[in-house]
Amino acid sequence: MAVAIDIGIPAKERKNIAEGLSHLLADTYTLYLKTHNYHWNVTGPMFQTLHTMFMTQYTELGVAVDDVAERIRALGDFAPGSYKAFSKLSSIPEEDKVPNARAMIMNLVKGNEAVARTARKVFPIAEKSNDEPTCDLLTQRMQIHEKTAWMLRSLLEK
Image (tube, rainbow, N blue to C red):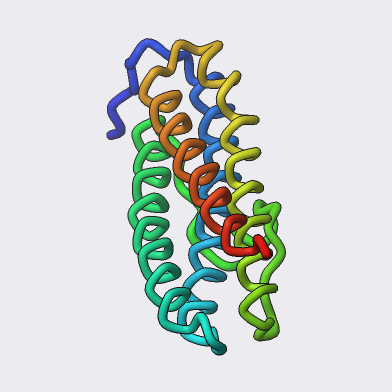
């Protein structure tokens, strides 16, 4: 027998927040996969720098997908966990080729900005429901993705 959730957020509001977080999870996982792919396949004069940077980024994203999925579960919903589900929910296109290093950087800028936008869309839903833990998670995700996008953009300067 399931025990009812009574955390001060009505079931319908929890469901709406969890749906938004499912999009965030899909974007985060898609960006994780793309970043890991680039880590494996980057070439060129910036190989060592990018290989190391991408590893740092995909490692952080790996922790983030767990944090987002666990928040969805704490709200009483099931977290999506398949490529099929993620492809339907994500705003980030999959990578099916191996671009050059500069294109990899640009794609990761766009990916990090997309995750920040997705988190920003969920924030007012969580805020309206006084869901401070989700708001805190979203604030952290926006901060990390905006900073990562800035750092990546700086590599594109001539």
